Image (tube, rainbow, N blue to C red):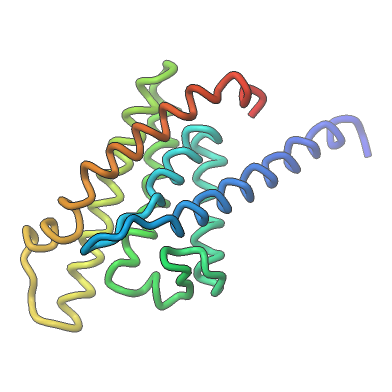
Length: 187
């Protein structure tokens, strides 16, 4: 091997390690649930933290790995659930929406220069993209198996109860990633 190929290998290995750790962190956060009529998990925190710490490319890859693990049957989703059936179910669009959240974050951080503004905008607009994708998915699947459902009804049950808690979780994720930045500056 020449020196050029040897120099690239450690970067690829470390990317794999960080991606795997990011996927595991998201899984662990999805298992942490706050009991309520609609249970709240720390999954959004995990996604926001992974994106904030690993960046758009690695963070989005970690989200993809997380989703693929769950699709393969490894119980990484909330309440230790797994399987393609979860992803193809009416709320699976919100899990798949995490991937679009990562892509949105990646886009914002690539196009906007600065330390905090691109990250804040990326997480905020990423959350909106996640909600949009998940809501459309929910409506399409719900109307196939049941009667028609109104857009505001879906928002009232699937988005509005989660909006403020998710914004708080993303704020916590960004704040924690900033505090850990000196220790994690080599990422």
